[in-house]
Length: 125
Image (cartoon, rainbow, N blue to C red; front, side):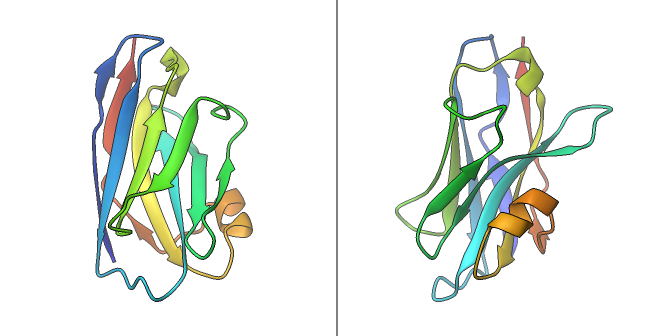
């Protein structure tokens, strides 16, 4: 599975951005946990949101609940992250990730995923 993110950029506080991640080599007959993580300069990796393809159950970090929405595209091989009411502390490199599994919980909490994209930068000023 290869993951390629897009949609990052610079935005003023209070603005919105939509990130997308396209997966190739992805078997839609199998279930995956798909997630977004971020890493600020000088900081560690932080979970953002995840979705389980089996039933579209979603999970969010407390820091983004009510502002960010994770979803799968109509083609099912895309993963989107709609980010609203952005804050300067949302500034980071954002990565999408995937792991074939029958649940998201532990993977989202631990950050253990098998596949990672190269990242897309989001800057909020």
